[in-house]
Length: 177
Image (cartoon, rainbow, N blue to C red; front, side):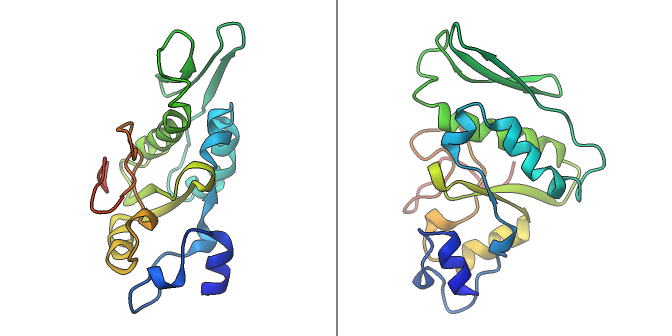
């Protein structure tokens, strides 16, 4: 199991697991890549995770992308909520576009799971960003077994500098919505 896990997550090391196997099934990881999300890739990523989302909800919502290369601007909307990923009209949004895109996708998915015991958690960040559908208990079990906090499942936030990811005893977010 660990050899496959090591190939999938270059930052995850065997010595990051305390004295037992990880409770996470890394075969269920959905690769996302924050850079790709920010470069007009949220709808594509949503389409890739839709088969798994459909296992937990009956009618997944539609995502709409708005791209204006004149401004430049990239926004997504879902169920009446709009998210600006970057816009020349929003100072600092381009520099935070990876975080804004990540946050937006996870909010969109988790808002639909609010009546479920399942939550869509982020694993890793930046170009290694992935997602996994877990119960709160599975996420907590991972926290108890995986030594390195940066490998723990988390819910993305817009709080810099870690945007919800756990780092050396610090977190800018929480485990649940």
